[in-house]
Image (cartoon, rainbow, N blue to C red):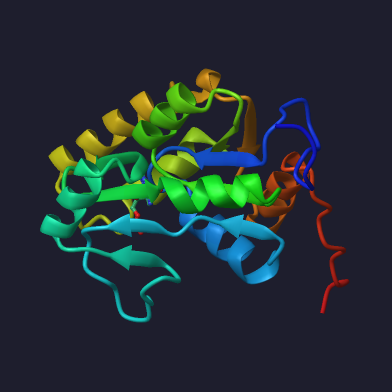
Length: 202
Ligand code: 5GP
């Protein structure tokens, strides 16, 4: 599929997948993009996770019961889906994403690594962007957090982080999340769009 506003780099697709290790700040970057870049079509996933305060149906997620999610899986409604953090299921709704791509929109999926691998198998021509922490030390700080986890839990999180970081070579591009706005602007540029000019410091 040639053409469309999103064609800006070597790949010929409007689809960009953003993934990366847990706690790297994917959610913060995608929230910033949702608020700042209306020209990006950010996919709204379905999930079995209950809504958090302030989250709206159809804006942050489509909230589904496990039975509803099962039905969508059976219908083949998902481009990809995965159990994330061993708990809830999350999935990208195929029809809305394909429709947005067909309309030439700059489509962004913010999903976990398992989901990114499924999209790569289904749509290898998409653009795959790995969001990386600035340093391993910073990542450890974010993961270990406030010291509320047991040493075993902390160790488990760090092991997971190591495995997740090793996935970077599977991606076309790496964006370092040293600063949310800078990382979001870099991502938008990779998508072939023009980053907004920044206001000078207030
Ligand atoms: P949260 O529950 O904090 O909103 O998201 C938890 C994790 O689920 C994040 O790592 C996010 O990238 C991932 N996620 C959100 N939507 C999807 C999706 O549609 N598919 C997959 N595979 N992961 C998702």
